[in-house]
Image (cartoon, rainbow, N blue to C red):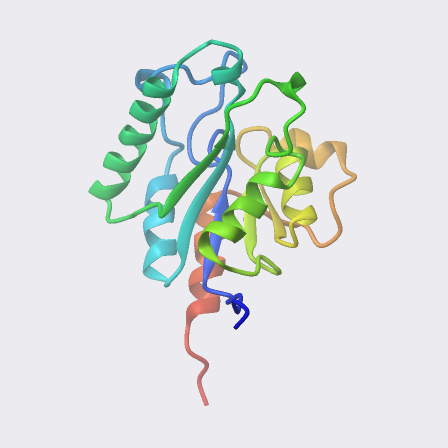
Amino acid sequence: MPSVLTRPKLVILDRDGVINQDSPDFIKSPDEWIPLPGALEAIARINQAGYRVVVASNQSGLGRGLFDAATLNAIHAKLKAQLAKVGGVIDAIFVCPHAPDAGCDCRKPLPGMYREIARRFEIDLHGVPSVGDSARDLEAAAAAGCTPWLVLTGNGPKTLAKGNLPPGTVVWKDLSAVADALEASAQPEEH
């Protein structure tokens, strides 16, 4: 019998510039990982609205030799620990560890990482909100069938100013505004 793909309530988030401060020099240690104001609380609110949260992040610093897998795991442990303090959880973190010239299909703007999320969770990504701050986040999301959501944190203002966003892109001030929208959509309808 063929597997039936379901549409659970899922949100895909980019990491740098969406959840935490971004840096042109990469986030290379747990000390350099600093959450954006209200972002962790927003993830907890998204969870409370019944959504699973998955992170999809290019981490070419691994492929460039700027940090190792143990350091990346320590950064993500800090993210998860701080998130747990406010009642939130991330179901999975997917990363592309490759340098830009590696020719992989998982590096955004290609949709390979999103296809892996769909396989791992056995879900159809059509219409799933995918939140990012750069064109490559939005392009990968759209290519995978997600609804691209741009936040105006991190590189978001520059991305919006450049224009040429994928069709159907929704723009939000920040992750808190995303949580507001998801909470509103999770409310039962009054009759």
